[in-house]
Length: 235
Image (cartoon, rainbow, N blue to C red; front, side):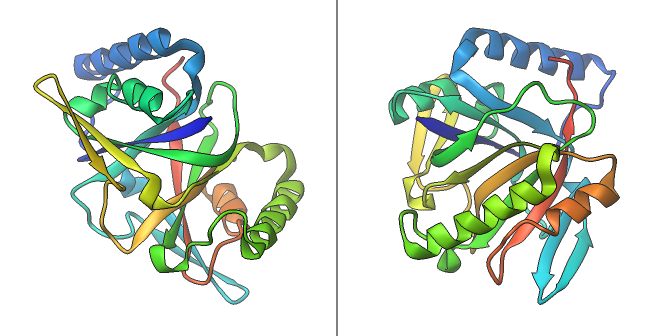
């Protein structure tokens, strides 16, 4: 079963080319080597200050640069684990270096299509939705939305590298490690009105093309797509 491990932190990261950045990359490389085939996807994301938010208003796309709202905790990256059960996914998540200073939200996925090694022209669209507007899996509304996403995938074609949908936020477990102790909290990392309920990974030549693709992603009436460029860390 696939689980999305969303990496959450304060957004303060070392600049590329510095010893701190190199040390961080080495830690994640060691984690990925140890996790091996259990990793079915993942990426580090450019800072939330570089985000592009896309909403739909009728036939129009509303574009906003920068983070949607000021938050003390932001998504800095993600992994997708292929794990036997939640316990195994949690044990993997606790070994992610960011768990020692931030948090990892682990949530089962309804579906996931794996991807290869990310490149410099790769982007992620995090699909945010109001909790009150979430559609439960295995319902007629879900099937209708799934069909719309299928049409979107056919239209965009080879640009899509991966995509997935999530189980409801009540199924999430937030993982933290402090002084070597595993701390678990039921539910998502944020108590805000909006939660991530899916994501896409795709290629684009730049922000303009990435925004054009994101504007076509099916969303609910109050949903938004948060566009973030993927960091090419070289592994």
